[in-house]
Length: 616
Image (tube, rainbow, N blue to C red):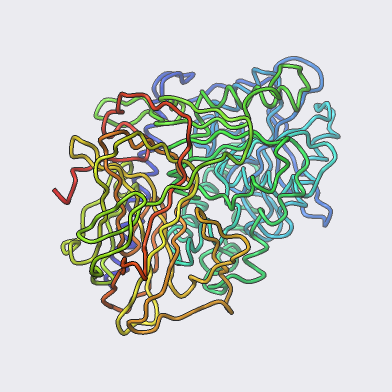
């Protein structure tokens, strides 16, 4: 009952947060009709209809054509939200999952913008199956359909983030002949490890709330269909809403609690080497919806065909006007075929200390205003880093290149750590648990004697014992403690200790790669030390001279949209850090970079909230 009350509160808060985000968007500057953020039709012509896939399923599409006559290059946004209804009455009210402003700018640059609705969603036929086998083949058919239309010149690209980013990977893997380039952002590359169970810890809250969000987006589809008297669409939406429950993620994750053939099908990274077109990838370190891992699909691409923009910040940063400039230049080069020199630009652009304008009352402007405080560029991906080791020691010490030593430290389990960037406390730390001091451990370095610029994945290698429990779940949080006494959130990682067995061929000193298979499960034995290597998803952060590095160890807690179902049996966990059991944090240092001396204002960084140091 307590969980039910908590979940209801979270659901209500999520609804309010989403409504608030829409209200914030409505007040965005630059809207066509003033602060209400409504739009007048900014296209020359709108074409809607249904395309037929290879198996006969009909998918709804909507195309916005530029003003003027002729055939146009086409950019496709393909998702299961409301993409097949772009240009409808709801869209003009800014009731749209993605960015109307981006669509408008693409049209002004001479692109036709085509939205395609995934099967079993909105008013498309078929059965909903998130990232199922038909998703890529349907995308293939949509690209080839677009290439053959009288308003198309046959040059097709794809763009968008989140679901509209994953669709690009799976479509490009199907290799439609007329696809020229893709620009995916903020994707799930390995659904289980990126979203459904990071580190093996089940994340049921996100998928449940996402199902509610999906239904809300289909309400926008219905709103447009009702205004346009589209009875076919209305009937199909109603049918899809009735069918989706039995195929929803929250049902399927109960059916597939461990990695199996079904979950592996939903791992676009496994076939990313089939992508042969140029790729512009964008992702953010503190992404509250899909994490920053993305299955590391970029490592399976031809590096000569890859450009990347990486940033601190959250899930919707793809809307940034700064990024939009890069997106259009990329599409102009590889979809239009313009000789604009984009292929000579740096392959990796790393946004550091990203900020956005603030509204009255301290609320951030929408992501359109997001921009980096400073930028690092590299000519090749992956970016080379130097591993730097900080050893855990007695009295909560964290010492660079130190030696293990001292008596072990214990904490009561499970006492969740503080939430960060949740829908209840977005861009903020949540409150500490009443007995947090008994349920967490913290290890803090001395003040830095140099600037330490980190980049990429990290590994928290922890020797742990449990008492009278066969399993336990770990959460590790990396923070910066500033000289002014404020603590800044940097990144988090998780591990279910029974799934600690590694794929040794894939694991490195900076990235533990879980075997994550049923046959690899290893229960904890009472009071027997076991090494758990916690993967910390990619991040880049400047720890300036005078700051301290901190590592928290506790029980998984709300992080962004993620809410974890941690192992529930109470225990007393003990973390060892003697010479026989050296526990450590290994970070990647990006050498040869001069860090600006000025520290960003506390609380200004997107999705990196500050709080007073609770240990002071």
